[in-house]
Image (tube, rainbow, N blue to C red; front, side, top):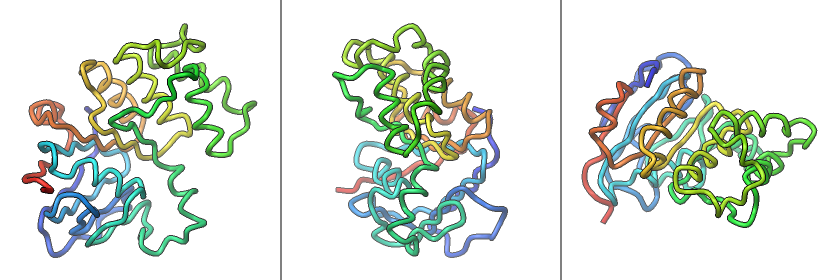
Length: 228
């Protein structure tokens, strides 16, 4: 994966100011996640992997960055803003700058591929006239251009993962969080994320596959231990 450097510090007391960052964690511990503090700075355009066994806290960290759960300890900055000081009415606008590929995908099985993506666009307050063509282009980009009317339940695992990637980027986020995105599809899904990264999107991927992360050429942080 092409990338700009991701600066990683584990158990560090201080963090250099550095250039503007998309995300900064400073000795952060996710509520309900792993107990070991994590400090991590991702500059714009970075690609970075979080690896670790089940229970090491990968998902909890992604959820914390997505503002879905608070830090139990430590600090989180998103787009140069301290997450602890963001007013509730401003959190939605900040979340729109983040796209998420969930581990369980969270597709709506009885909706078409087009409508699964459209739902994310409508939730962001966008007008159908503005995003309809974008959805068609996204489905072509992920290799599902001829299946826009097919129900999500009719896709195989790889197709569902491709659809989840398309949904995550419909609102043109600056940061993509992907939790075990590859599945059995493997490198084909990571290729999509790599393409996004080359286009300038910052990407943070959580996976158990440490070998895959090490071979990617991207930044890499391994989370040791278990939350239990």
